[in-house]
Length: 108
Image (cartoon, rainbow, N blue to C red):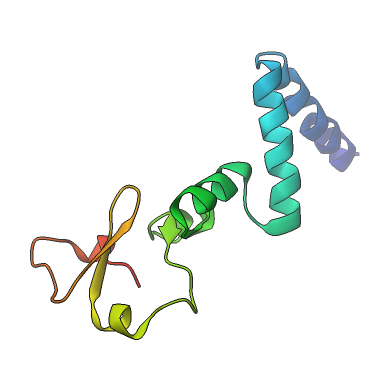
């Protein structure tokens, strides 16, 4: 019986919260759920990946990494020798390590 009550609460809680949201937010949330199930990325992740050319997913930030990472397998030989750091919208690479940058911003 306890699992039945939990199921009802799990269904009723999002419906009660939906009354406070506008239709555009509900549509974006629903689209994000569908794309998350299908591709493992939200709508915002897809938009940022398209805009930056990097691989952007919220799962990177859950691991303590930058949200957008350079796509793997597309590195040139020149870029693999340089040291890269993640900024707000892109990765910046240098020939030598920048002593003023932190390791947490360093791109793989």
